[in-house]
Length: 250
Image (tube, rainbow, N blue to C red; front, side):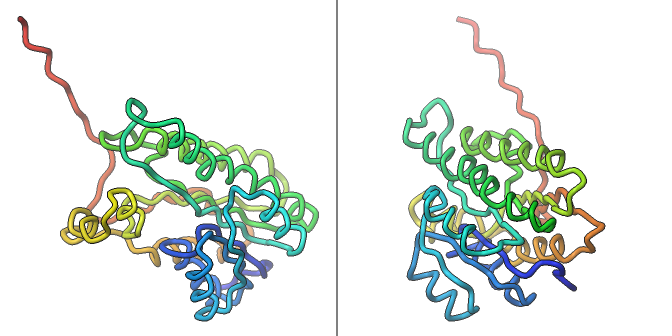
C-alpha cells in the first residue's frame, strides 16, 4: 500500500476510539500525523506510543485549528470528532442541540474550509468524513439531532465532490454502524453497563476496522476515489418497519 502523494494527516477526536486507531494506522503507513483532541493526557500517551504530533484543543476552537493549517501542510483531513446524546427532539435541550451541531457539523464545515485552500494550491489532498448510518436511516431510539448532524455531513461530502471537480483532491465518507467505543459508556454514564448492554452479546465493529477502512481509501491509486463506505458488523442490518396500532375506541 502507498499513501503517495500524501505525507501529512490531521485526525480529530484522536484521543480514543476510531480516532486513536486511525492515528496508529496512519503512522504505520509512514505519515506525519497531527492528533487533535481535548484530552492532553491521552494524547501524550498516544504520542509516546506512535510519534504523532499532538494538539490539545477542541475542534470548535477556530483559532487553534487555524494555527495548525497555517503552520503545517495538511494533505489528509480526517473529520472524526463527534458527540452524541440520549433522547430525541421532543425532550432535548437547547444546550444539547448547540453542542451536537457545534462539534458534529459546524466544526467539520470550518475545518474543511480551513484545509481546502492549501490542498487546492498544492493540487493534492484527501478529506475523510466519519459519519454514521444514523445519517442515512431513521430508527427508533436514535437521537434526532445526532441523525440530523450526520446527514448534514453526508450532504457536505457529496457537495464537496462537485466543488472540487477537476482537482486532485479526493473526498471519502465512511459511515459505520455499531462500533465498540467509549461513546456508549458516555451516553449512559457507565461503561461497564454499556459493555454488557451493547457489546458482550454482539460482534460489533472495532475501531481498527474503521482505521483500516480509512487506510484503504487514502492508499488507493490517485485515479480512484472511494467516495462512500458503509461499514456494518456482519450480523447487523439497517432498515425495518414499525406500525403503531390504532388507539382503542372509548
